[in-house]
Length: 315
Length: 276
Image (cartoon, rainbow over all chains, first blue to last red; front, side, top):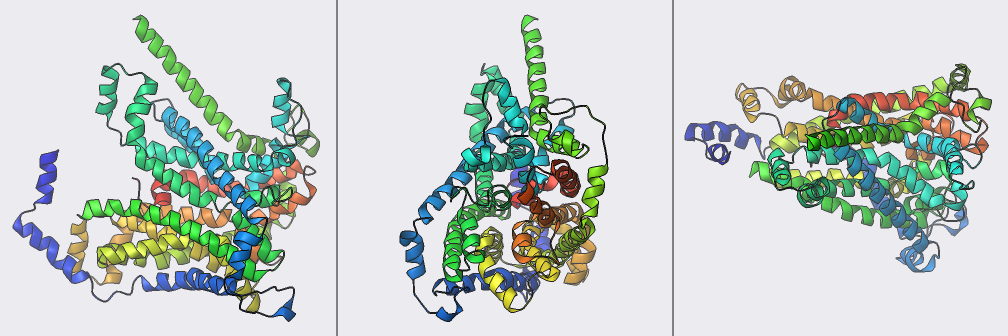
């Protein structure tokens, strides 16, 4: 194994020439192939973002055109962070949604990945079926969850709970955020499962054999041997899950519309409401910019993980 | 002997548990499909009816409520945006893998990622203002442009991760033979990376098809997509459970079929090859 690696790392002279010459001539020359994509992304995401920053420095309410577009500096940020009594509870909801959903999905996804990593009959079909909650249209399934399963009158969940003597629960009134967390976790469980399964495939069989020979039981093998080897898959599942669950929108829109009160408003949902219900463009832009700051920090962590691979391969 | 028997029984136990958990995980989708074949009265019955005379009435009703117009918008928006994203994204990925120096390639990757990770809500506010000013609200072309921007990063990072795996010798051969960059991409790179690129396209179609955020904020009556048709049922909840189930079944067929087909590429696609 290590000999083979060494052979790859020290190519013979003719080999090196053959590899090096065309690569050098192709690198660093005139490059325009990435420009169309770059221009498109700048036009549709970066310029709007810069406009959002510009808007956020102004007071602008589309419903009160007489007030115009006065420059207010960082006043909107002050209002968001310190003046608006809704802001911090909404940040709390956002954190609870993201953390709650990702933790539930991590637990359920790990259990499924471990079970589906065994050699059982119909394994690939089972894996395919288990992927379905991740593929279904989220807004559509959330509506189905609300009316077919969690409805106080016609819901199957309450009917089942009735067998163990639990009276009917009005899920979306009594536990609105928790109900949404549950639905989002259901959607993201297959994603975690797929990432962990991919990670498990890279756990060498010899390591597991050695653990077995040493008399470790299944639980010890997982916590002491397998789990440490899955560090990177878990990092990826957490980062991607966090970034995408942060954007949860349709599930909230069709089930609670952010209510009751503010209890299921998250930062993106509140941004949308401030823009398209109260038409406070300046204030909504401010909330959007704050959301971007949160997301960029997460993306920074992600790109470090992704470039590790290139560095390792290219040397 | 005794230990082997115990081992075999515990094996069967884990297998049975696996089947039960997978069944529970997809039960909501299965039950929704079943409910689509019920009458409205049977659909709200508690205890739930398991044996019933199946009817296609709800599917007929679902088709009648302007379904084809929503379907047209969904199909056009997801297919055209994916096609444009492929045309823009594949050359970009080629430049990142075969032309750029490592540092600029990584900078470009960071830019691409931050584009996709930017919360949609942040760009919605300026986009909404621009689109309103240009009188382009409720226009299918706007939806296509937005979905292209949404899917371009996905196409680029998936294509990039497949291009990294291509054997350098073949490409160098093409360059030595004097193939132009365009010829190299069309005749060599795309055919060799075809399975991965196809998976990227399927994922992009799924994302556009499943989008609710832009569809609900940027369309009204001219260009709404299928998820909007379903969301219209929120006002009269519970009344048309069977019809909503039938409609939902029709809508999820596309992403479920495409997703299962592209299953092997899902993880690499979503994580940009950070995990293989």
